[in-house]
Amino acid sequence: MAPYPTILALLFTTISAASAITGYQNHTVGGTAGWFFNSTTNTSATNYSSWASTQTFNLGDYLIFNTNSNQSVILTYNKTAYLNCTVDDSDNDTSIYSGFPDGFNKPLTISAPLTIVGLNYFFSDYSEGLQCQQGLAFQIQVQRGIGLPPSLNQPPPPPYIEPPGPNSAESPLVTLPQTPNSGAFANRVDGCVAIYALGVALVLLQSQR
Ligand SMILES: *[C@@H]1O[C@H](CO)[C@@H](O)[C@H](O)[C@H]1NC(C)=O
Ligand SMILES: *[C@@H]1O[C@H](CO)[C@@H](O)[C@H](O)[C@H]1NC(C)=O
Ligand SMILES: *[C@@H]1O[C@H](CO)[C@@H](O)[C@H](O)[C@H]1NC(C)=O
Ligand SMILES: *[C@@H]1O[C@H](CO)[C@@H](O)[C@H](O)[C@H]1NC(C)=O
Ligand SMILES: *[C@@H]1O[C@H](CO)[C@@H](O)[C@H](O)[C@H]1NC(C)=O
Ligand SMILES: *[C@@H]1O[C@H](CO)[C@@H](O)[C@H](O)[C@H]1NC(C)=O
Ligand SMILES: *[C@@H]1O[C@H](CO)[C@@H](O)[C@H](O)[C@H]1NC(C)=O
Ligand SMILES: *[C@@H]1O[C@H](CO)[C@@H](O)[C@H](O)[C@H]1NC(C)=O
View 1 (cartoon, helix red, strand yellow):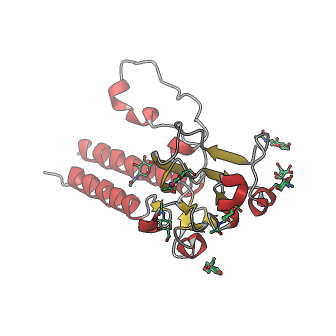
View 2 (tube, protein in one colour):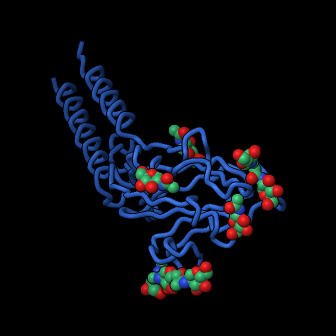
């Protein structure tokens, strides 16, 4: 008789579609040129600042570096290190994606997640800074977007699992995960909970007729 389950299904479909549209992006650094330095001509494969200016970067996005073991990828939030093209191992503002397999010319794909809002700096520190000085470097402005996905966020506290009771089948809401309060992501979960509760209310209403 009642179309409530259909309405519920429609509501959930709408929410899923909305998340897909606003989801996370992977940015292939340099486009088809990749992340390369030509050591004969001392030039970078493309202008990475120009490439970056064509993109919008949000938390939870990844930068994908198609490269080989002739280049490194340094991510830093330390502008001094970026401008000087140097890495300080003890600098906790810096992630080093190197220590690659032995030898040159080994193909590599490096994925770097964007986890901090604001200026993020990338460069290669190989050839004692020459690659970086010659354009294998760029900065980006990372925006909040929909916030970090749980996979890149601080691990949440273990969920409280209610011991199974005589009426556990009637209380599915207690098993919803507790999420840390991280911006739009949390808001969307709140929306799901609200609609879920609405659906439960409708079902209860219907069963009382
Ligand atoms: C983006 O890159 C990450 C890390 O490599 C990967 O796990 C994810 O599946 C990629 N997403 C898409 C849509 O390609
Ligand atoms: C570097 O540039 C030189 C001159 O343009 C070219 O001959 C050579 O193939 C390039 N090397 C690589 C690895 O692209
Ligand atoms: C490239 O840089 C190295 C190191 O500075 C230098 O020895 C070499 O002459 C340069 N080559 C070109 C083509 O500019
Ligand atoms: C790269 O492009 C930027 C503008 O996006 C420009 O300011 C810069 O001079 C270019 N760099 C080189 C080496 O051409
Ligand atoms: C990688 O580096 C080695 C050693 O400097 C050089 O002989 C080779 O041409 C480089 N390959 C590329 C693709 O730049
Ligand atoms: C930033 O990098 C510079 C140069 O490597 C270093 O001297 C400085 O201590 C770093 N700053 C922080 C906050 O780590
Ligand atoms: C800048 O780089 C040079 C080597 O290229 C290094 O000697 C110097 O210590 C660096 N300065 C800072 C502040 O890291
Ligand atoms: C990073 O280093 C700074 C200065 O040394 C320190 O205040 C901060 O707590 C460190 N952060 C982490 C995550 O270790």
